Length: 92
Image 1 (tube, helix red, strand yellow):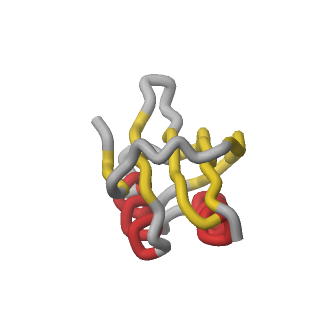
Image 2 (cartoon, helix red, strand yellow):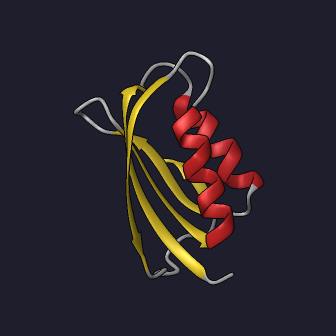
């Protein structure tokens, strides 16, 4: 599949429950590049680039989240990749 970029905003109980580490582990295992970070409004932002099929798997995983999370919504914005990332990281 083609290389793509997806920008996600995840809302619900997603901060303080290991959500960033969950996304980081899964994104790296899927071979994706980008970042995950908490936003001041209580949501989690994910920007990821890589194989479209792997990105779709990450989106599905974000809907599930780790054990103590409750995901209410995942907003997706699909874009062309920019190639700016060297790996996947947790941003602060």
